[in-house]
Length: 385
Picture: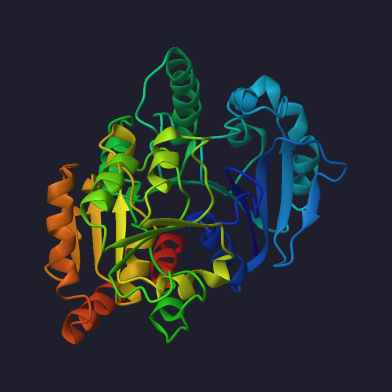
């Protein structure tokens, strides 16, 4: 009997032009011989005449419209009364196929928790990648406290209904396990990499670097969000004017002043969003990858997607306030810092700068990344399901 996989995702497939773990999971499941179809269930701020469409990759996307378009109304994704009736068509579609297929529910964020009760699923799986209830910026407010209560309540319902729970970091696993009486079904599966894509020979992105620039290029690639420590990079850029800091990805900071002030520095450049297919070309443009996160409860659980992508491309990496990555620290490969002090960051980057073209170090970086290929990560998860 073949499988239908229903994936609850944070937004529409191409929402911000980035490819997250959930996208790769969906594509992996679709490629399996025993899969009949993959359905991407997601909230959408805008009403649509067609709630279900088939994407170019063959995955069906089922949109659940928010209460109102403004982001303040996203709380409705976690409260049953605001979305229950909107699931009716999806549930009818699945009930028509019940008994002909095994139908599995995969949560990748804690939205629509009532789904666990509205259908007789063969398996319910929660692939947990973040401390969803905590504010990404690390800042507390009355609104963030209310949101935390609502999201935590939804997530607890999913945790108690899940047959298997996968976490992207050991810290996250510990946080989840503490909420459950029995936790032997909770596993850690860190993020991976499309190794062959990033390790292969790639042309560098053109017309990005200043003319005749011969210094070291530092790169951040991914969603640019308030969880990043822009002040740290601004201070480093000021102290090291011969370095160039490039940010590649969509601006999700909502006008964050620290980010705007950082962009005013002459040796800081933001390219904007680029298609996922172009990311390896930008990766080849840089000398050193950097992942500058703020110290916060949210970031304690984060395991950045880009760590192994940088390493697969042979690039050394500097990470800040990412305790979940600390066990990968290795000379000439990955420098991890608990401190947000600019001088500490600069010293770590100077160590990597001295070995950025070291052939043995490049080979070692790729060797580390090769053990984390997405195909192996997801195969291990599916084997447990």
